[in-house]
Image 1 (cartoon, helix red, strand yellow):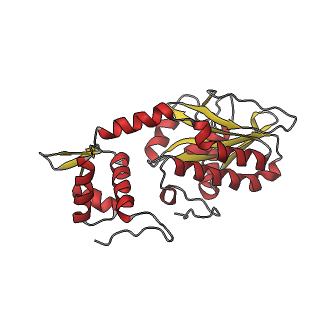
Image 2 (cartoon, helix red, strand yellow; image 1 turned 30 degrees about the vertical axis):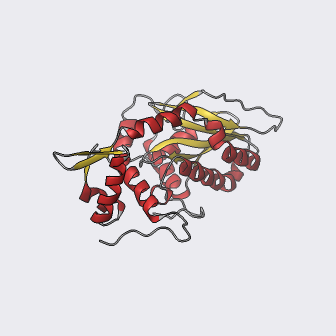
Length: 274
């Protein structure tokens, strides 16, 4: 089989790049275990190269091999590494620079929220003094389907996730009372997938406007959203929207997203439309 090439101008070691892809592949796969051929096909490497990489990862406990069915899965070594990250993860430090640029550029409050079951929890923010305070504290919970971020996240979910969301009793995409308009949502979903962002003009909170774009991790479904809240006029949405989407791409890369395969955003440098 033809091996996948690294991106143009990449300085990464091919072996390290391929090992990283193998780990991400095992983490993203719906099944816990994968056979060698499945891994190599998904990553785009020859079986001999795949076997060599997997053997090295098994040696260090990052991958484990089942000797009975010859399958591979993530190993216990990942647990200690991930625990170290979780114990020391500071969302403010990690995504703060991206939010800072966004807040200053849009003259709004820029926030990053992560999805937890049916909520979006604000874990980082940056704000500018515009004389009109829009406050949303760290730890604030919003319904995951709420307004701009709800539409942005929903737009990039897979069909199974969308079905789960639509089965909920209350959906707040465009109305805080939970009234639901499927035709409107479909239209806004199409626009969001095309442009990379969704927006809300005073529908959820009178006088407060929002623009949001989804954030991804290693999987295909969003893990959160970058969004701005402000009193900017609707006429600025086409200008501010791409900024929000660009920063969402930037933040997604911090969380291990293969942004060229998960984003179909037009007009954002370095992200291929799919």
